[in-house]
Length: 65
Image 1: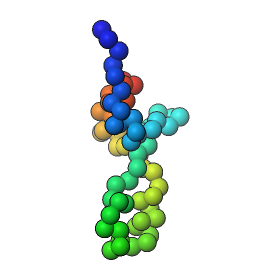
Image 2: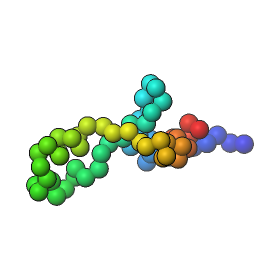
Image 3: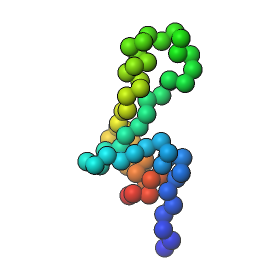
Image 4: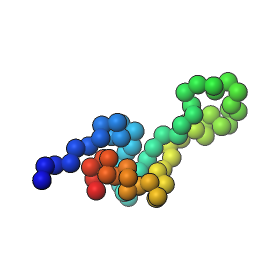
């Protein structure tokens, strides 16, 4: 059986942490920001984590599972 290929779009969006969780960027920070509160914009800059329900699907795209 051939090797599984990594989905390059997923590879650019997700990073694995040392403990095995998957980091991701928050959405909603590209446009329509002027109506958003400064606190909201600041919070969206931080990285988030993929939910446990979606981790298996993301790992399959990263060819790690």
